[in-house]
Length: 193
Image (cartoon, rainbow, N blue to C red; front, side):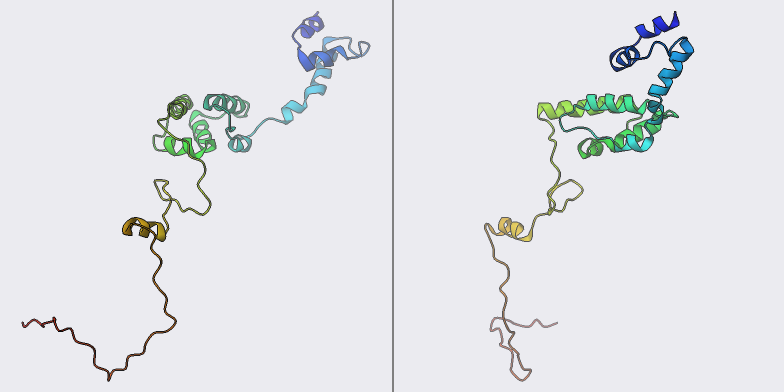
């Protein structure tokens, strides 16, 4: 009777496997249980670990909530289970720089709070209140506020109202001998103490 109840609980690939079993080899429920364990024992060998969890990333088109659910489902398979503090810390490190930079300052205390914060950030992006910036250009240096460092010419253009060429270069420097008197400024009057 257990064999019949067992087959009712199967779906998809496991049901196809059950249907392909040789009836002559399965006489008792223990025979069926051993065959099942032999067939699907690879699942226990492929248990995810913390390193795989740390390597997960959010897909380009994946919503924050979808990623959080996928990540949390994966993390639930880890043995021994993660404590909430470690769970939150690892999840934060898997986030893109957009989410990470905004969440690290507030340090959410648990996973649910972090997911709520991520969803609010995503909503602000949809509303146009925040912008997800693409990764910085390779040549641009970034400062703390994520502003690119301007080149000197760009600064000169702003300061002087247009493009300013660099300082002229001279092929030689004139040699002034000490015997030659320096020109005097007729308007210069030395001050007396």
